[in-house]
Length: 502
Image (cartoon, rainbow, N blue to C red; front, side, top):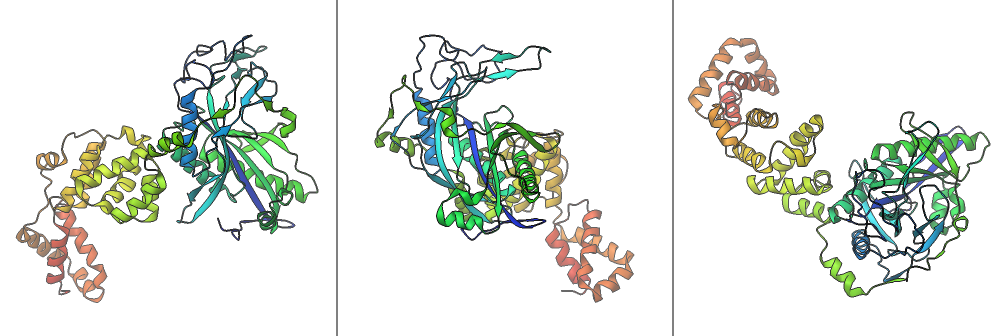
């Protein structure tokens, strides 16, 4: 990331810079929990997925889940990060009713994954590098429920002990757009890797959003010195679970902090909550420092040690990740950086696109249809790519019919709509044949239509001689008269000849 990149916010007393870091909690895709054999499946009834270890019964000892460790290593490799073959679990001490042990088993000074970085692409094609500070494994807490009775709270321990990866970024992001784009890219990577399903609605991926503001120029001083005093006091807004909310939190907090400072106040180091209805944040509690948690090595767990051979074995099993796929799409199919990024961001969309391309043999045309017509229809219908009514084979064949001149682009859109809406099923070629939608390539038939339209519109004929660009009107009339079946290339050639524009 360029150290000269500055993003300024105007205040009543001068310019400010916003500095953003995200702590993302990603639930490990694992059938069982981090230190017990209890199920980690979502959606079970209250307290159904709870072992004696999760409930902190006396004498129960944690046993590390090897698969969760492997998933953390896979994620670290996907983040281009350093894998630490020696790490340690610590006890992070604090009290909540839904934390049965009275402490959380986490990693503090010796995490399993160290520094890394990922490339984040913004709208318009600009890219920024965001540093990863660390990734550590920890167990989740349970859930307190306050709305079942007016005077009682209930505790559901199903999530207690579920494996989490906490991925901590460096304070490298400077705008709300960068914060949301980073969160999106991180989600894309873990979903490609299969280490987290990224389902934010179910809480499997959520972000703690750290925001601070400083006077213009101070961020550059921080980059030069590494001294955090230049960045101002940060707040942490907990458990933000959508890209849109990440942006709202950053925008609101930056403006709120600037107003407080310009009014002569101070920013409290605190944890805040986001109110989705009002789009504002509010104080939850004062923010603890590390020493407040009284970290110490967990006496029930030995240090976690493994060798480089295992790391390399995991590395060899990694799939093609979004950045590599994006560049391959650009090189192999001639796609723009933007289209390649959109298609590569989601594993299912990328696979769909490649199947369409394999069927029709034209990557650019396939990209236009997938990112335009298909994504537009899916978005309107609130469907995912997995639930698309138009299969990749159908769309590929449909594009092929345009390429070989069987149908026009307009007819193809009509056929696409028929399949998407469920009015037709089966092969596009059969639908075109059944409905008589084949393109008219008979020049004699097209000439007859052209002659009729020219004869009926003498004023437009005179106008087109003065302004040749107005020939498009004639093209539209011919296509309308032919029901969209006339071959557009033939129409253009005949019109130019008949209107004296050839």
